[in-house]
Image (cartoon, rainbow, N blue to C red; front, side):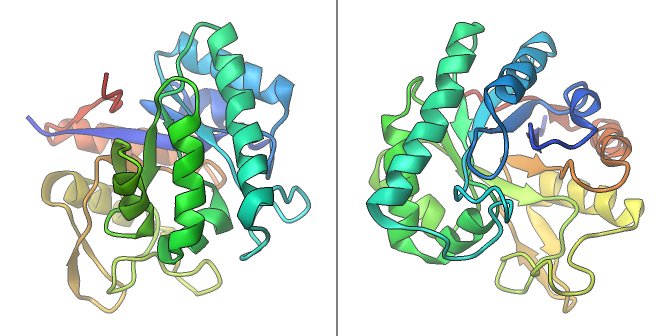
Length: 249
């Protein structure tokens, strides 16, 4: 039987976190860079544990004013130190509450920048390799993120997106472009099933492309995010797809 993980980025101040934690199988918790603080991390991790959801760190550029969405915000040793502090803070809180850090997924502009930037991807991979709990590295397949994970001997969880439009090269359409985020629920659920079953998606130019997916991301900052996530899960399970986290233990 086919199985897939459902993940969501949480702890960023959006109103759907508690509902999403009843639906997803893993979560990526903001850990003080672009958003989040000690209280929000503890609350989100506690709720994740109560719902049996795998806990991951979601570090980003330390740019709270811009929510980590400014490309090229930081790099080098300064970025390495910030990411290390973010991931360690989340890992420590998780350990205090009885959970182990399952994975690390970079946030926002850092994620998008590192897809094409080997140096940035290597910084993130170093942070993951040194993080408590032996976490996996979550990111987009066939990009510098996966290549860096391989160089550092890290387990890699390939991520795809159910509610985002794709370019023909397998990257996401920029949020600055119209149609970057799917508004119709049918488009989102159809894309989720195709990704899970076939590893394929229709790019915005109509071309059919391969997109490897171990986990599907559902964004928690869109209107009725929990309702959309529930619909995605129902459709996947109706099509015989099992939902569970890639704990890789």
